[in-house]
Image 1: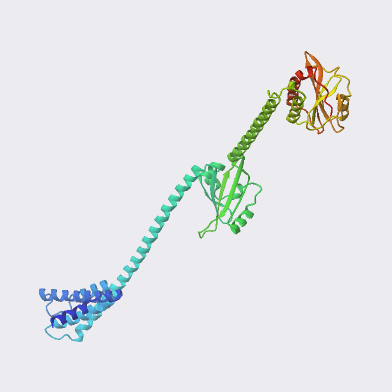
Image 2: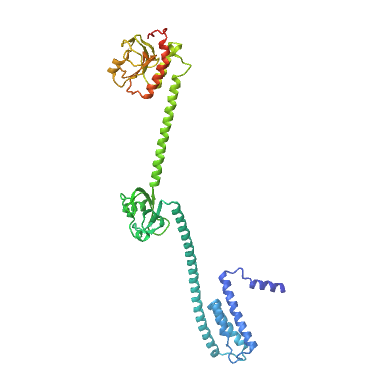
Length: 438
């Protein structure tokens, strides 16, 4: 029997399966009954009011229940108060005694519930205000962090200004970077049109329209500072994204340092290329000199060595033909490659009039080549270089280098021809040289 009673009691008091609002309602009713029991106990123990005023202090229980759990709990407290007062009274309580208590209780309940509703409304508003304040504090902190980050960026990128515009292109934010770049103070710039910051060739209305359609637009040109000085600037105009505000941001960068750096870099690159060309030319010149003074190639070794030396000279200076002409004997040796003389016999009888230290140059003149050359070259030859081959100050032979292309002999070409002529001196003085017939 005891086990069944315990199980029944547990089922009666087990509130875990009830929804939260039902548990709250039952808790309010229990609180109302508790308050009525406390008031009844106090009246019984203290004997206050005796039995002449049976409902004294029960209105306290009704008011407390209304404040704690609302009108439902207050009704429960009122009904319980009537039962408790009837049980403790020495005589039955008629309607004349219960009606005033009921009216008084309803008035207290109305007042308490009204105050309770207002308090809850005030609490909700206060909670909403606290939430709003917290959100504003968070946004304010984020704004300060963003402002600090922007200042850091402005200090790092000293040549870039960040400016905020409204929907029609009026400046609404003017930071220190913009003041540093253009010279206007915030009081002077805010409220002005952004057209005063852009290159004169750009129209602000067109830029705003394209930025609104495409999200961003960029360009470059010459802007003007406050003092009228030019500013080589590149700009980018963007409309706001992810915000409910119609506006734009424009970043303007002073590109003059970059242009100077680009010019310096291009000049350095040109200088490097020039040095490389000079080094390559020097390398080629050294190779040409080594080729002509090669000790393994001696003109004293015979006609083949002389012809090889002439071919090396022709190749080094880019000529079309070369020949060694002895006084009165014609071409005794001709470079193996390139142009060959029309006839080996000389059309000039000798080398008279040819100074030992004088080099004759003819540039792009066929008639003069035909008149000056000691042997007959093809008609297409238009340039001629004549270098005397001297022995003890006398020009006994001549080295003729010809070209059919429009070509002007350089000082380096003359120097290489002189080197070849000096090396041919030993061959010329040998009495055993015979005319080479071709």
